[in-house]
Image (cartoon, protein in one colour):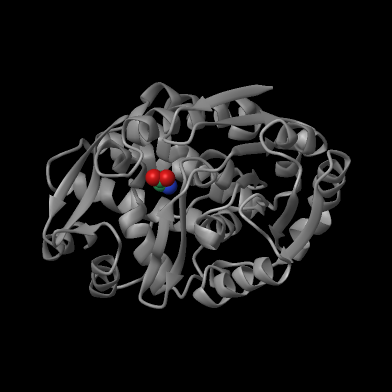
Length: 347
Ligand code: GLY
């Protein structure tokens, strides 16, 4: 069992363990008075893990409700967000009640944003069931839904009361879903830890899962504690994401987030080599590790379409786009640039 404390504006623990769903009620009762609790999830995810969470919450005195969304990126919409708000209102949820997000990044982002805004904020607990959510999306308080114009365009920072990562839930992930989480894990090596990157090249993530999750959460903790509101160092977590979000959007979200991040990292690394900022050997090393985890490194989307999608991305600030560029594996810098300059990175 690992417990990692996040000293954000609202502090909380990330707990990583097996069998944790069965103890989530007890853990939650230590954080809040037993209350009404809605489990926000997808039906298929709830069928696998919901009963354990619900029973455990009920044993601890919570009155449990369920809200299902259809799943997939289209659930991060204002329409589904509105339906969840109406559900909370119809079931008389008050500011002393709570929202539990059981699922991947889509569920956490949607449920977190609903919890942040319903009656100006009600308690929220993240229960990630994907590797991607465990190592990244569930930690750090980013919540959002999408607009047709772009991903995560409406959202806010809202820290959860706790993150319960039950590693048993990762056993039920499809190979594809696990592979997508691997892209986010590799990202941590690229952005700040070469030795960690090398360990991923040597030993499969599955074979060192608990240490890997704890390592990523610890790296994220350090960045969130230093820059909770994402105006400086936290931006490093976006390596591969500016291009990745554009790939997702241009593909109509047919390319998964993990695959898109892998394509995004490979694209900026190749661009960094072309711009003389990174050596060819490190680029080849990244491509070979991505390929080892069966992640894509290219896509057939034209540079113009990607550029247009990048310009709508939330990382455009003061008219500038902040591109996270690897100088080597384990060392990245943020380069502010005019959106037009990005064209040379996308070709
Ligand atoms: N997923 C990037 C961040 O939390 O900042």
